[in-house]
Image 1 (cartoon, rainbow, N blue to C red):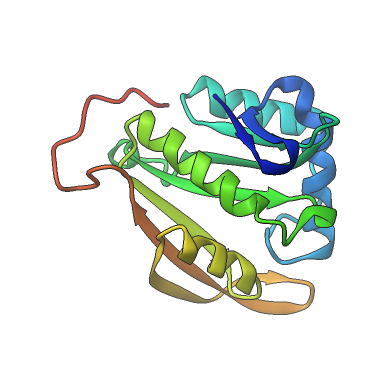
Image 2 (image 1 turned 60 degrees about the vertical axis):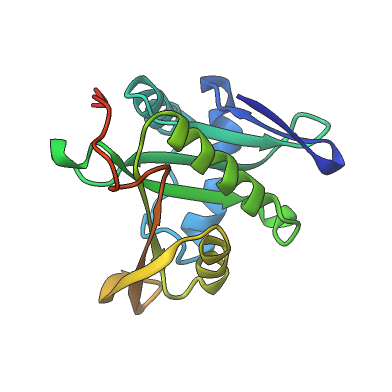
Length: 185
């Protein structure tokens, strides 16, 4: 997949060699925000392992690059739940480099990710968002996600209990028709 965006930005499939740049972006969110409940930033090798595992299982992992080739955002989808019955549902994740926030990059990347999920036959997308991250709620709402629930005090980070919002968006025909056979791990 390769999508050209305005301002010489491109969206494409992530590669194992992108792990260091992805880890750098993610480390900011692990250490400085409540966007993730992870507390220790994973190193390049762990990011590469996760990327390889997701893509080998048939899930999309995308990056947005600027005109110099620098990754300014990444996003991926993974199975929403571990049981086989969830094989048509994905949880989406998007992170934008802190110096690139507010430029519409997250919206374009999320749309590309959702399109890729539909192409691969997934039927439902879920977003699990810390209530302390209103920009993420707005991003997902603009992409057609609807609120479906709140988990009160579900996470603990930076000395506070944090509610988690669940949002959902139908992909393609959603649950209106029977699914194709899908063999995602």
